[in-house]
Length: 610
Image (cartoon, rainbow, N blue to C red):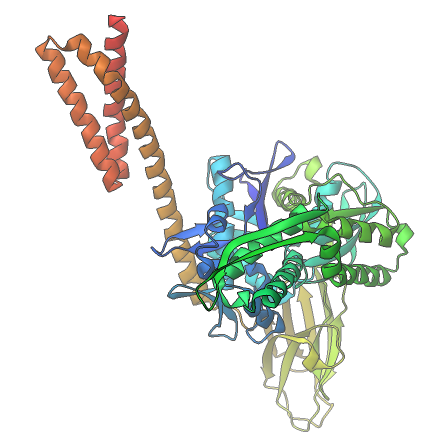
């Protein structure tokens, strides 16, 4: 049976998991790590780097190394979140052709789904290395509070990477699946998910019959560890400015060093009460004097710098409970998800709010990926242990704009999906033959304050006085949370529909072109890996042969046959070296057989002489 992998596409780190023999496992990458940094870089030679290797060179190649791309996916160029990111990122964010934001690496501009696809492709390859065969299907997680545009952009990223994303599920829901899997429990839980770039809180009812029902969800798609890091960076920048009169933010390499040091200090302060930030030679002064940054930061200082961020998450928890119609004491378990939940102040704030200690039984970095893998297996496997039902909700109210610029709700926030709702509307002018439907998402009564998801026009209406023509508008949300809308003239039967994609999304031609690029990269990457494996094998054999040369020469020096064999062995080694220098993978593989024969012969000669 084909495997469906589960991918947690995170802001800071990503991971991939798969269900084997009825149990979900997170797959380690080539370096033995279960999580991979969500970072992509382009070297001066034009080589693409993903994960740990991208992170290791970020300081020396800051302008061409992308991190936290998830915070930009599906967002418009004009959005405040994009403008915010532009002030704090060493890489260049530029305007795309559809009003979207894009990222420039060296002389090429990439869409954000394309950058995310590079990370997804890396997850795909990690899974394939582990399973020993290709995979084509995946369940990918997104923050619960992602809107329709962000979800669609994530699906686009999956398509570009060569994966069919058979389901998009919310991160807190995935965590609850992993928490409740195989436990046969009836419990109301809160999943508090504070990751690198986003925050979600979801209330779920888990039943022993295998039903996972989301009651309510809320969040902030621009609140996470990245913001905690930025507070530390600003504190360091302000202190340095005060001391030396130099703004470190103006230097991209210095900014990346500050980012790395701030993240490291934040992590260390979860286990110690004080740590030092020491960055020698961080910048030169106007007089060409090398300047150093060296400051102590305490856990208390970090908590003071970030107190409002943690407080904001707790306020959102309160709103979610209210929408769920539940009291705090009705929550039987609090599950902490995301790397930021290791911070003592975050744990304390959550415990104080809910009046109970959080569950320590899940791994904050791996639980979402495990849940995605469980959902993937449940979608294709008809086995008792995979017999479960997932009932998620739409995080935002959906509707259309009506006369006066108001927002008319069709599907309320926290409605269980998939769902469909219809509502009749009438024409507002005499002899109106067309109606424009503006599809919106948000919580404001004013249409202009909500997000425009898409628009379409229903034409061919019969001419009649205002209010005499009735148009039925239907909204549908599928299990991925993707919205489609259709409008129908109830008298003539004429209808028009739209599957809502991000208004700043990629065109199908762009996606097709990016998919081809990704395929070519995957082939080249596999060839590089094969060449490297062949090179390593050849180097091992050559090293063994060369250590045996003196002993073999001593044994056969008096014989013409022996000298001839030695000469042939040297030719084999020299040819192998030449092929390795050229990077000729097929040639190296062919030569490995000759090296192996030579090694066996040498060992035989030495063995007989002893």
